Image (cartoon, rainbow, N blue to C red; front, side):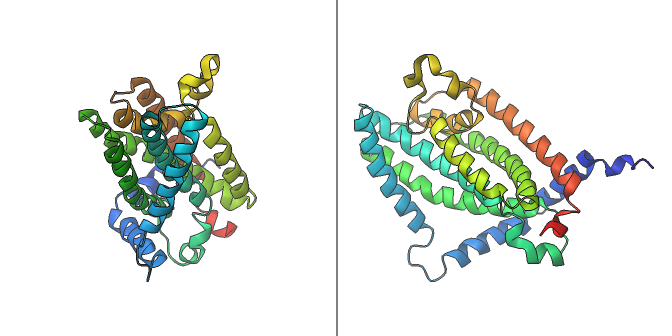
Length: 268
């Protein structure tokens, strides 16, 4: 017997995603609760992460600028923005691997749309990203790097990047819940992608091998946030790449969530 059209994975997945997005008070409050619980009784709270990230960016940025024979004033803003944006992306992907596993008890007791748990993780990481932006402000202030109206483009850039990360989170969360070896594979893959993405090196340094960055969607997802700040330009090609990547990731994620949403509780 054929399944009703309404049970098609794309329709079911779309309903799940829309139901989750229509309840922002749910995942936003849970994300804020996670932040408060994680840094409970801590003096600096999330700024401990900011402090450690700032020390890493300061030391490694200066070291690599000398190794690559780059001007510190030009290299450090490039590296700091790229590193902070990449930290948000990679943390979201890695935490999404256990996005359902860590909320096993809730999933087995209460029926929430599955993307709610992934949005909860994303908002949590966006809060930490907001704290880490202090590092960018300090770097730009100390090096006296000027910005113009292009800086406003980081808002749509981060939005597109967040949509893409949500799509990837919907994909990896299903595979990692079904196959428990997948989280380690994803973590290793993100580590490899870090070195294949222009964060510590500039795309122009590759010469004829520039296709490594050109065909890397993560390079464009980083660039739509970094270019308006560092180069003060509107990266049209990176925007097109990023929008296309976000659409592909979300569509694939919706199909997976719609097809396996009722099996996830049994996999936990």
